[in-house]
Amino acid sequence: MQDKGNNLPFVSLGDSDKVKLGEAICVIASQPSAAGQISTGIVSAVRELKGGIRALQITAPVAKESIGAPVFNKKAEVVGVADVYSIGDGQVVSIAIPSNVVKELLKQAKAEVQPLSGDYFAPFAHVAAQAELDKTYKEALQTPQAGEDELIRALIKIAQSMAKAGQTDRVLATFNIALQFSQKISDRDLQSWATTEIAIGLARVGQFDQALQIVQKVSDARIKSNTLSEVAITMARAGKLDESLKVAQTIQDPLARLDALAGIINAINVQKQQ
Image (cartoon, rainbow, N blue to C red; front, side, top):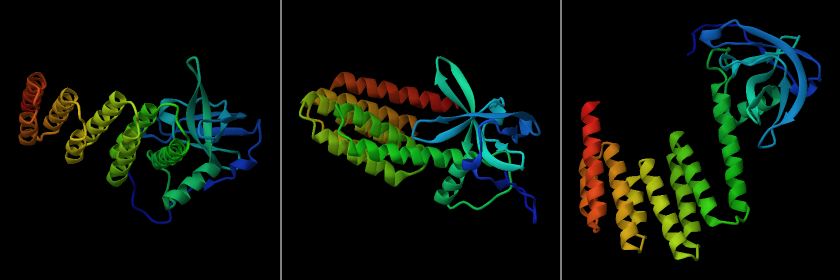
């Protein structure tokens, strides 16, 4: 939420590269449920996170309500964004994503400077996740994998994440890359599995036409019927009842067709109850 106003006060992003170990910091929670809560501590270490990001480990406790809050130095400069990090065995430490990382993310997002609010740092989390996703995506495609099935699973998960972020064009492009990899698999059973997983994955992100096109590439009649059943049920759950019935009617295997019709009826009953 943003408030309208002019000449509002704002805080400055400091240079996190100049932060020294032992330097005093404080975290000021900004979410409405914890507004004004302050925790203090020092910078105790520099920890490297996954993806190569170097974070400042801090002794100030970071509660759930403080995640995303600014971490200040004695000059009232924001030198980081409060977060927590799991180091394994159930242990979690408080960290600060460096302000210089935030500056880079702001450049990537072409964001404008805004006054602090409860959700101020939410875009940073999204941009950071997207940047990491893009980096991993490129690495996956450039690095030969021991098993094509693992790469295809990863691509499907990436595409589903993109779909949740509303990046439809990239979703289709990623699934297309997964399909290209699947066609290179020499083992026919594994290739059939990969093709069906891609089709089901497309259906689950609402790309039903593309999913049905992919199913047609499956040569095994039984696997094809089972995949069509899964796609039909997914369509019904998405509210496309007429289309799902048409798909169900094309299923050759009686048991798979029965399963699809049962799933469609269940989806109808669920929608009636809502």
